[in-house]
Image: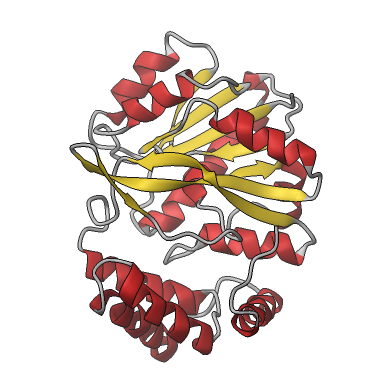
Length: 298
């Protein structure tokens, strides 16, 4: 089986990161190295990571001084970049690896997560990015399904073929998030396949609305701005927002607020952080998905 590494950005995850660590320790396939980047945490995150890194030589704690001028989403990407730079440092003595996994610090993985993902990626050399899906942990044994699309992979769980990661230049530090969406579109534009597997299910221990961005409507509004920031076609956003009105909490109003965020982005007209070529590709794919009723082929 091919070699892989894991990068985890972590900011104030003391309430959840130990569950993440335990789920990686239970994996049937371990990484060559796992770099956990503390992105300027002010809680007990660092102490928890260090306790494990002192016991296990393949787990490494790295500190990054958070830049207050960066949004949470952009800072998260810079933390990932910092971790990758550390891997390339001779200190780790890692010369070659085939896959790069990104893992959020509030995720619990099933024990065979990496074995399953890497087996499927090895079976298809054109599969550049793959992941499972996750459900939100609502506590007391309750979970909530999170809407997902087979063509998209959540950054919290992403596994890159290293060549694909290099081809697309890694993540773009987006002001409003969507860096995983941009990575997926860029990979497809470069001829790679991107796929999430709904039969491989992880648990998100910090449900949307309980972390850095509290308030579900605020989050939906930000997602709408993010749709504008990646150049999404307005017809696609209208249909997506309408679907979310009936499929995603808060019902009805959530989808409307998402579309309002898109309109806000349109009138603000912030300079986009991605190329015009990629925006054109995104819109063409979205129109094709509308025409084909979002049909997915395995």
